[in-house]
Image (cartoon, rainbow, N blue to C red; front, side, top):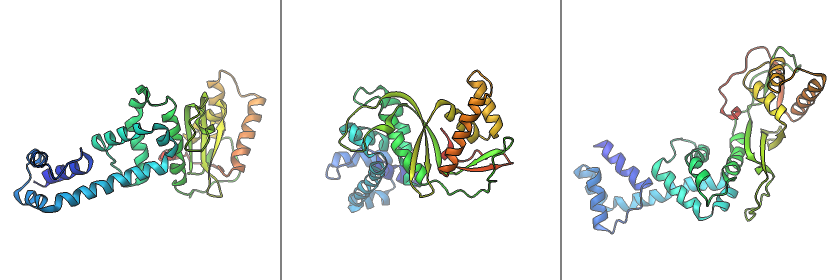
Amino acid sequence: MQRALEAALSELVFGPELDPADPAATHAFFERHALAHDDRAALEQGELERLLVYRELVRGTLKAALEAAIPRSMARLGPRFDVYFERFVAERGSTSHYLRDVTSEFLDFCATDWRSDPEVPPYLLDLARHEALHIRVAAAAPESRAARPSLELDEVPCFIEALSLSRSAYAVHRLPEALEDRSAPERKDTTLLAYRSPEHEVRYLELTPLAADLLERWLAGAALGAGLTGAARAAGGDVTPALLEATARLLADLSERGVLLGTRHEPAPETSAARQP
């Protein structure tokens, strides 16, 4: 019977709104869940109204988390946001203990339908994921592994934990910050490096295709030299003086930004979700 009670409470919070003043609706609700006599009696004697207040608290908390993470995307969605939010809480809801995970769960849930919904701008998923990236990078763990300050070609580059590669089909990072703005971004394949600076600010660096390829290889655990050779082959060429010079500039820039810490002999771990493109 515990399972029946849990199912009933789940429907009260995440399902269609129940009117406790409607005898037919409440009777159908109780019949649907086959509650024990004591549980049903408690709900009929006033607990139902209190649980409906809890429903609003839970939904309000989830919506507030989304408002904090993707405010511009929600503004551009307008009334369509409420449609997708209601579907999200009814069909999936959040399974994480952390509010910061609600946004990624919501966007994963909406991704397919947004792409086919004519009322949703085609760039909106890219914009929402870009907005959500800020919280993910800001909340990443501080760097704890030691690295040699030198850069050896046969060693693995060591980066801070608070970074992420983000790919999109639109240059959404160039859109104005104003909530009332409705301008459309340029259609352009874009790779950004989002990172937390030494001043604890989330910043973004737009990468060239070569820089994006190099970083993806290095973050996956390739040594400096192996990553460089792999990127050159992927581009259909060899390691040239021009490529070496471009790579040196990239490494210097990353080091100056506080992103690159140095190198280490052991392979890089692949457990950090913040490093996944």
